[in-house]
Amino acid sequence: MNNQILQQQLDSIVTTSTPFKAVYGPVQSWRFGRSLGIDPIGSVSTCSFNCVYCQLGKIEDQSLHRRIFVPTQQIHQELQYFKPSDIDCVTLSGSGEPTLALNLAEILITAKAFTNKTIAVLTNGSLLLDASVREALAIADLVAVKLDAVNIRQFHLVNRSLSDLDVMHLWAGILEFRRIYTGRLAIQTMLLTEWNDREQEAYISLMQMLCPDEIQLNTPTRRKPLTHILEARGNHLPENSDLGRSLKYVSVDLLQSFANRIQSKLGIPVRYPQVTE
Image (cartoon, rainbow, N blue to C red):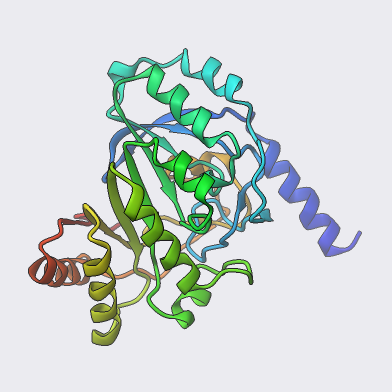
């Protein structure tokens, strides 16, 4: 048996070891409080990016093809087991890029009917040039868009997207969405290294153009799984897992310094984790 076949079998065991539930948590988040997760993607991680820091591990299916992964009815049924009073918000993210779900609008409407809490979507923004995606995403109360790069080199090193995408494509889509979105827009930026002055100034110029309601700076303090582990949706690996590896991250002082620079120039609220482990 060659190594490739053995790895495929191991990946299959890890992926299927936990029965798939589309609704999971609640998960405690420094950004969103006590958040109930909705996974519109399913047990196979599917995304247009394959970010070096992704908590899901290596993406199993890298794609830009929209389809229905999880029936809306399944999500509706699973929501009945949770009490809205126990959560601060509902967050769509899960096993990949949520805007790949063709039934995104239906899922958001279902989530809104279930609770009067904030409905948030975490997206990498790669499909925002599609008008139908923007229309569906606009149903959410809060949309947090990933923006980890201000140049091509950063984008390829950190986000490792499909070849059809580039950082200008991503930025154009975010701008288009901003023009029509009336909810709360947050920009999430993951820092693996300290950005130089030119990179920081380029980022500040982009944020000045976009005017998001909030900026969230982060750094990857969690271990990254070596293979797809479904439990990683909940911001942690299983306690008995030895399948993760640590990533380089920046200090809280560096996050604070960059945050202060952004706030002093733009006045946009910037949040970041107060403690890195």
